[in-house]
Length: 184
Picture 1 (cartoon, rainbow, N blue to C red):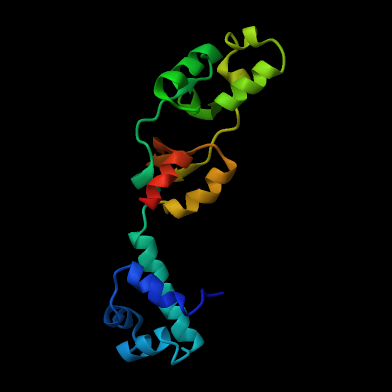
Picture 2: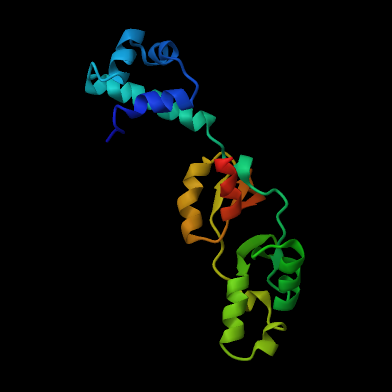
């Protein structure tokens, strides 16, 4: 299913394309692009498909990638750290969560929320001595640096963070606040 034909002009302008350039990329006349955009002509299915394929490809090429918006200074907690030491790191850096490593493997995410839940469930004075591995949430998704940033929006809705990897090595983290860079 294609977007509405009225979207062609808006997308084209957002991408900084002239009608002539879009026509050239699609393989149609500038006049036809003009007629479609003004509503004087309805393109064939194949022509509409080619137009939207070109616009989609250009949008993907020009849109920010995960590697462009991630925070590159990732601070990790160890599964063997105490909750108190992980909480101190979170306070010091102003983070609400930390990816957790067991050796060099990402095993989860420790969050302020997870620590608070443990505090509420019983004896808060014992929480600080608990090991991070006892509080850890499931590991966050890991995406490649070239993943379109738009694709991360739904992930953040369900996860607290998304890790960004390049050549199988984690090089960044994306949280909801990093996604706000897209609206600048």
